[in-house]
Length: 506
Image (cartoon, rainbow, N blue to C red; front, side, top):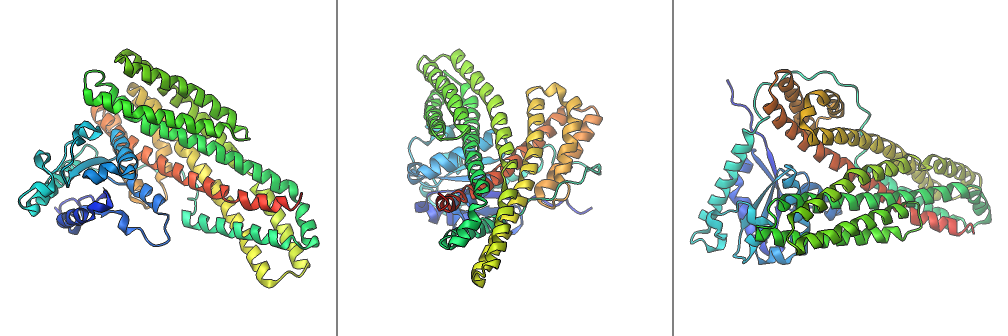
């Protein structure tokens, strides 16, 4: 019998550019794992010209199975490495969504008093690579440690065993177009609106556009409202990932563990910063402002109680803070998400499209230049693409949100797994159908195994498999949520040219 194929794990390098030589050395040390297809590494030098580097890094960081943190004095002095990449990686590890491997490349004092102090570092004995007499030996030790980790992950529960045939789930909705397509469509629409502003110098064109003034105003207001709800949504997401998910594991060691106390103190600044951002949103002129103010008020009270709990070394008070923060996160995000999606669905893109098509007809009648007509036609096409994309993204987001809500209920009460799982399984299988991406096959296979474990009356295996499914589902929901965020940001970019056109109608 042929051996089972080994899985290819993805890895992300987080490092200071001053340590680029060490990253190159480690990359070479992992060459055998890469040549044999067990490991695929990525680092920021592989970003292509013209790509959104921040978005690419976020995508790679949040999708990697492994994150290598190359520790050195320069790593800790970099806000991006420490506050962005390391924090995000640790949050995902706390959610069982990745594995963080700190690699000490140069001696650095105090690393073990940070959040990394609880993790196993390499090389062995926490001896920096540059302190070894033979640097190749140090890198071999690093490569062997990573190989052992991959071996352990290969044999983790849910990776072995026969795979039963998956039931036939419902046919899913068509997937949304890729971000590059919607970005191009947004640019076409912006350029068309900017062209329209120039053409409105002609009285006949201005008169034609003014007839659709109400459609332009409605669209601008709804785009602004959607953007405000998305900003609140993002702050709550940060609150969950960078505060609650980070505070909870450290709180279990408080107040006896000195490192935990120091780590918890550092998270207080994140609470304060998020509350301040919400207050800024609360000053805007939209219906979302009142929601932002209420959440900021709640968070200010939680932040004050958090500081008091740490100052008094009172574990009971800290647990009460966590309960209140958890309650806020169990109520507010779903409410904001509902309003965000309702606002996105109610965007009058159809009315704006009708107006632009009518204006297009008038431009033809007014014998506008052929080049202008062609550019305006591209703007109309771009708006059609955006409308179609938004419909598909919001529908897909709703499906993942519903699955996430049900998974959270099971997670909070594991005894309900047998009864609640069949409904969730059908939803997840429907979301997997039609996709040939690795995540879809992996999730469908694990769902099938979980169905079999429940049918066989094996609760221990069922719960292990549930955690694997939960990890995959949370990751996919995060990606879909990121896609919706991008769509909202792209539509937000249309607000300025809309304002510009409206200013000529005054």
